[in-house]
Image (cartoon, rainbow, N blue to C red; front, side, top):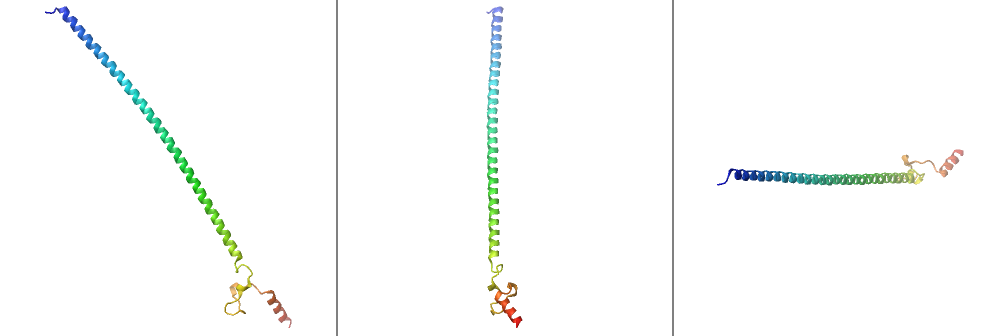
Length: 139
């Protein structure tokens, strides 16, 4: 049979071993928790950096797209203004060169008879007609 001292000695060794095992286990858990927290923090930082870079890239892409749209709009408006100006110039030149605007006497003659005039196209008398009138007055 074991003596009381040897039982106490074995009990103390067992308690010491258990205490050391609990302390080592707690240290290991603390270390693993620290490593896990550090890994999570590092991963979070990388994800935030990646999200920031994606956001910056999206903003840059959106700015480029908006610039392209603005340039296309300016070009479209410029083309429209140039087209309108060309149409206006063509209309002015066509109007100025038309028989109605020029003193073309052929537009005043009626299609029914050459001695009749179209009233809304009358341009005035030709110089030879004015001379004929003056000659008839003098008679």
